[in-house]
Image (cartoon, rainbow, N blue to C red; front, side):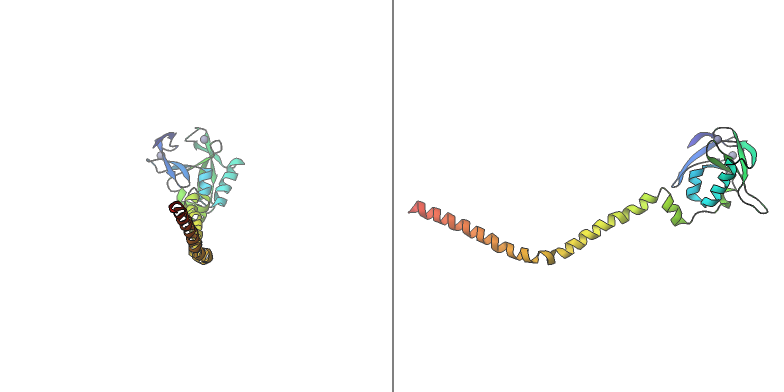
Length: 180
Ligand SMILES: [Zn+2]
Ligand SMILES: [Zn+2]
């Protein structure tokens, strides 16, 4: 789905994509992506994202390209040290980060179970378990019920017969009284 956001590198319209962790905007031309801080925290190692965000809000880094959304200059902040430090563009106004095509893969993804626990798939994975418990209890109750109700169930027919016999006797008496 096309959006009103434009790529800071090649000015193409960014495409909106929905993932289980939230929405991001990608450029079909250069492969760059704009993601919100919240989506990133649900997808990648939180420490890495928080470190980049902290550097940006404390004013570290240099003014970089224009934000795809608000067009203000983003701050280019270093995310990793080493020979080829990763430099990510951050917009403090939109709480979003811009990654060039080869940059996003250099972040550390969360293990699947952690991502699931904090992501939007949360409710989907828990529902079957929540439903399974009452079902299991219901089955257990059904299995237990013949043992619990054996006594009363055995007595019920004899009580019923007493009532029927009583009614028949009363009817017989009524008929006999009319005939006599
Ligand atoms: Zn682009
Ligand atoms: Zn912005």
